[in-house]
Length: 113
Image 1 (cartoon, helix red, strand yellow):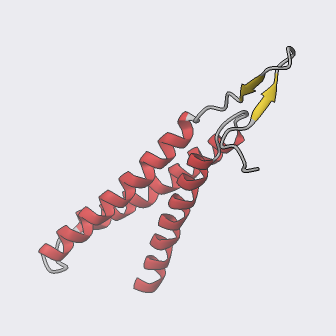
Image 2 (cartoon, helix red, strand yellow):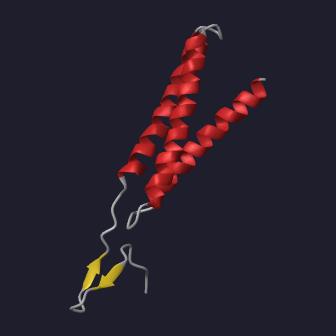
Image 3 (cartoon, one colour):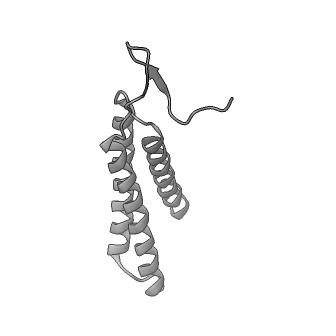
């Protein structure tokens, strides 16, 4: 037979009950920070391209803020994954997204030196 989407537990009366796993708020915050970091980076790229690379310090500051946001997102994802009785998909995706963003910025920094 096929697998059920939901894990089930037997109650003391012998009835089946769906597990009560929750989506952790720290995972949602982590995902929002990762998306915000991507949006901020894209705005910085568009702004820099519009001024043909002479946009000034604000573009660099926006990139640095994006890096900080993604690092904070990694921390919130880690906090979410430490909670009990949660759905782990959202914090895992958010953590992977934020790690990729952070690695991208570190690689971009190393290449530009």
